[in-house]
Length: 116
Image 1 (cartoon, helix red, strand yellow):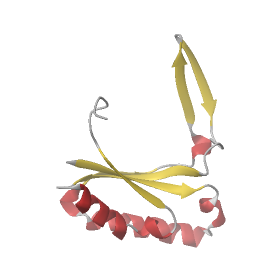
Image 2 (cartoon, rainbow, N blue to C red):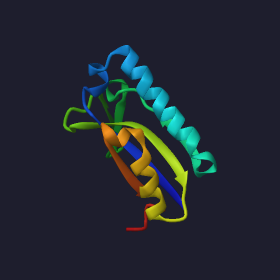
Image 3 (cartoon, rainbow, N blue to C red):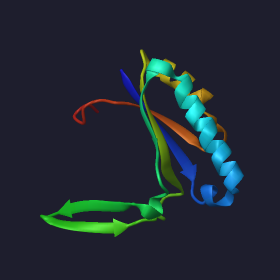
Image 4 (cartoon, rainbow, N blue to C red):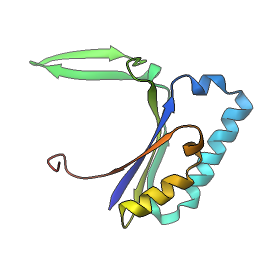
C-alpha cells in the first residue's frame, strides 16, 4: 500500500534558521530518505507557500490566490511517498523522520477519492 508522509512546518520556521542550520536540516532529511531504501517511492522538498498559487474553478470561472496562505498556521514543506505493508509500518517510519522533532508528520494512506 502507498502512504504519504506530509511534513507540516510551522510558518516562519525556515526563515528563522541560519543558512548552516538550513543546510544541516536538509542533509538530515535527504539521509533519512536514502535510509528508506525500496520503501521510498518519491520524495520532494517544497518551496514555502509564498511561492504557491491556489486555483479554484467555480461556475466555469477560475479564481487564483497567491500565497502565502495565512489562514493556516502550518505549511506543507516536504513529502515522502512510501510503499508500506500497513499503517503501523508507515507510522513507525514517520516516528524516525527528523522533521518530527520540529514539525508535524501526517501519515495518510493513498486511496481513490471515492473511498471515505
